Image (cartoon, rainbow, N blue to C red; front, side, top):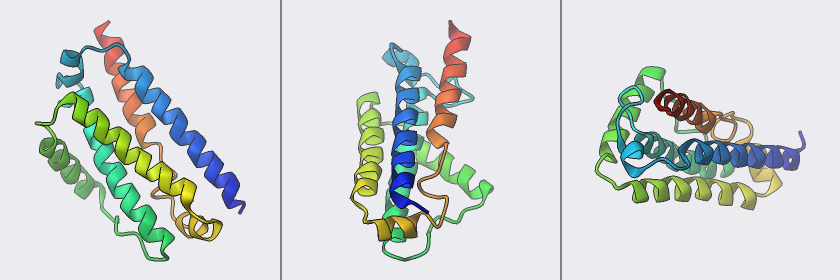
Length: 151
């Protein structure tokens, strides 16, 4: 495996998913961003959810790079409970803080990914989690679908 090619591929995927999120939220008002009308979540909730998962992603990325096992071994039911809890934990945060949390947490993942040695990255890449994910693309799709429905 060419780990540097994998690194470039992952970085490109993260850049594309960021662009998809930013395009999906572009020109929405703060009221629209905070309105819980996407299956009970707001755009803000979606970004809060992504921020929380990026925080876990960063922790597991550093854990795997150190040669340890992933600590994120949850079931779909556990994920659903965790998602509901963490969205509610962050519900009182402003849109500006939520956007900052998302940008900062994903930036931490990307900075760490760029800094990993080839050997560390090879350890991380043994597991699809935490780098090979379409999580942001999935949420960008939810937001786009909702946005298209309100036009």
